[in-house]
Amino acid sequence: MKNSLQIIGVDCSSKAIHAALLDGDGKLISLFKWFSTQKKTDQRFFEIVGDFEEFVSSLSSVNTVGVVEGAIYIQNFLATVSVAQVIAGVKKAFHQRGIIFSVVNNTTWKKVVVGSGRASKQQIKEFAIGRWGMEKGIDQDYYDAACIALWQLLKDGEVNVSSVELE
Image (cartoon, rainbow, N blue to C red):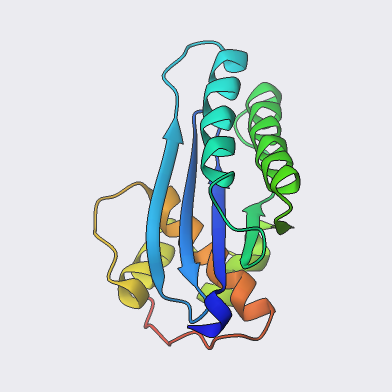
């Protein structure tokens, strides 16, 4: 493993944060999920982000790099704002811990990792299963988080993506 480097890729929604931790060689170490069943957005935000902050505080700021998918327009304005707030909470947690992080647009990581900026959920899932042997039937956001982390490695020129045939 290259210099004990860890990359944590993060995919956010208004109800959960999904993350994947890769090592410096692009191997999948762990998958994580922090979620809330609270009905009110503000209550969900504090629960989800608070749990994520607790996790981030356990990471080494020396050898960890974070990357989070940027906000996209969802069903409506309020849903989009809710997701953007969770992303801001993730960025704050990284910043407070001293972890260098970046934000990536979904079409950017999809193009670099999967080969098409318009890759479908199925294509992303097939890629992740082919690359890491991830289970079928888990939340789509786990596949996305792992690919987001891989994007950071590929961007920095650390690993080569293995080719996986996509339909």
